[in-house]
Length: 271
Image (cartoon, rainbow, N blue to C red; front, side, top):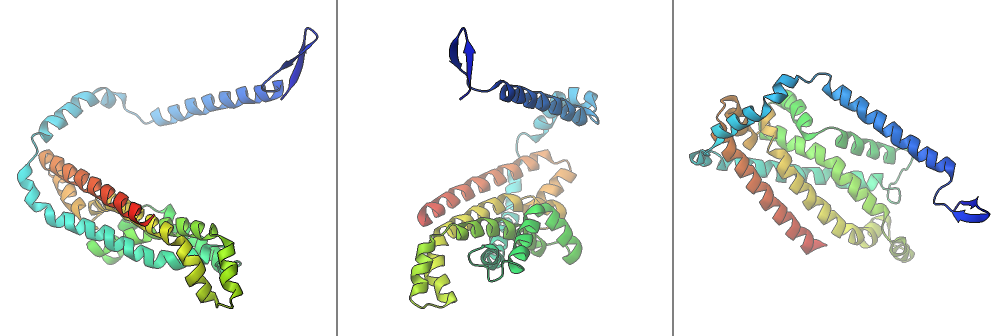
């Protein structure tokens, strides 16, 4: 800790003058950056619309109430499709993410020069593209429907599950691996008896957590033609049927709450 002399006595200081000036300079730079970002954000803003926003919001809410509860009968099947999109997409993502994770982990990859960078690239590519963008691409390639939604969820899940899983693999206890290897076990047996048991709780939690996220993401894929309850939402929005939109939002909210509860219970059971 720096010391300065004042009236012939040493005085303890928290920071040196140079460090204190550096901190003030950093704060000044942050203020300048904030002002600049605010200007960029307001460059295309039409403030007349912003001033009228409270009235427009009130008008929209008045048209959204009361909810058209009779519309529920048309939502059960699309809701079931949404759950299936999330579930099948998660399972398909797991199938591809597990081998990618083992190839990406430095302690299990058979080739750290070629296969590991390739696996890491797949993980980064998957995580860098949102599920909605994947759905847009797949709808253009294979056409609208549930298959496009399932594939979009799967492609997005590969990066999420693969990243967290390969990090869990790299954090395993190497002593257990060495103990099994010392018995003369093959590489596959070492994986089976020393690596998999250590990562199984993490793998279960990651998979269920991703399924929970996919439930939410699959609700909007229908906006681009990838099936599910999003198709009904897009139809109601196009017809300005705000009372139906309210019902759809309520159904989505209840579905997400239930998926959160199921996810928490399953993670508690495995971890």
